[in-house]
Amino acid sequence: MQISHIDHIAENTRRLVEAGVLNGNDRQIKLMMEGNTNLQARTIEKKLKGIGITVAELMLAPGIETEWYKEASVVHFGKNLKDFMKEAACYPKELARICRISEQSIRNYETGNVPTLRRLQCLADVLEVEAADMLLPPEGSEQSEENR
Image 1 (tube, rainbow, N blue to C red):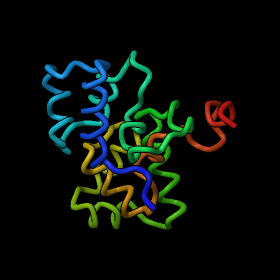
Image 2 (cartoon, rainbow, N blue to C red):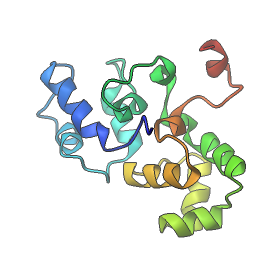
Image 3 (cartoon, rainbow, N blue to C red):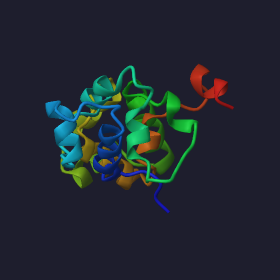
């Protein structure tokens, strides 16, 4: 069972707008509610700053509740991408080919750039991990140790 996917962002954003947590008149929020997958994960994270919700939590299937994703952030993406590629024995060239992006894009992601939602989901699918897990604090990091 897939517990996270970018397709859940629209519904979860809509719920937050209805609850008065997010401003439904904001252009980026409107795009999120429409299911726009070309949005940058970093941009969404900035919109959520201060409300106690992470991008990873927006990706969770409705009904899934866990504290694991409270510390998720786009800052962890590069390290996680490297780790997940290593676990899957998937090289940047192969991952780039499958996701129809350049190998340089993969290298840029490894060093701090953050993809669009659509690309993040493609990378997660190829590496056979949950999309939200791409944003968790890496295993062994100070944050992941605190959450145990």
